[in-house]
Figure 1 (tube, rainbow, N blue to C red):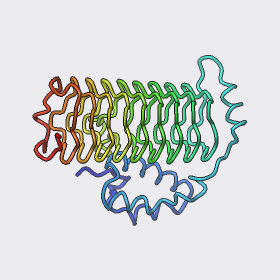
Figure 2: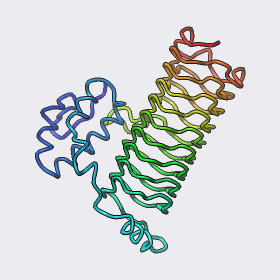
Figure 3: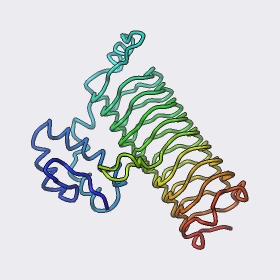
Figure 4: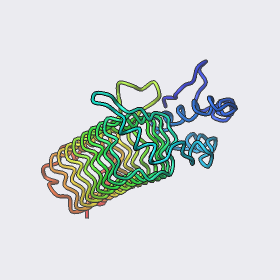
Length: 293
């Protein structure tokens, strides 16, 4: 297994020793958080490694729970942006704020803290949300067309009816809600050009994607174990090598969907629409262990 590294070849498996050193200073804390974000995205938040990392980060601390700006201050900053300039909110603590309906299009939110924030109906088209922390945040009906979410931490976030068409996503979205969301043409696949931090890909374990539009989405190597994809539209999507063990695809549209080497152990493949038009469904791994009826 690949391992992300710190300077002097410190490795992720040396969690306790390395993180303990980093957490001694505020600057070190920020380095640890960034490192943790990238390691989780790279190693899919699995096993003792991820648990050890999470145990080292105090999610109840001010970095993850407080805001350094008010909604009014954020609005004023957004309003000050002139034509051709981009608002920079990178690294800002905006935890818990109600930022619903605001226009964040093209805004740089890299490394910002948005845990439990309300972003309902917000406009985030082409925004940069790389390494963002948005645990439990509400993006209901938000527009994130062509946004980038690289190494973002968004466990339990709510994207119900949101539009993420064309977005580039390699984020931890464990248990996130995407019911009725649009991810047409979105790229959640593994970043094969950047593996120095491990396999960077979207993690959607136990996520709810019921009725979601995933037409043409790139889902190669994406972690979708126990995800709910009931009635989802996967027409033309690429699921090559995706991890679908235990996922529920009942009634999903799979016309033109590529299942080559996807792991479907214990997955529900019941009543698939367009199954006769699916690509390499017969080459999916553990197809004999899937539920077909």
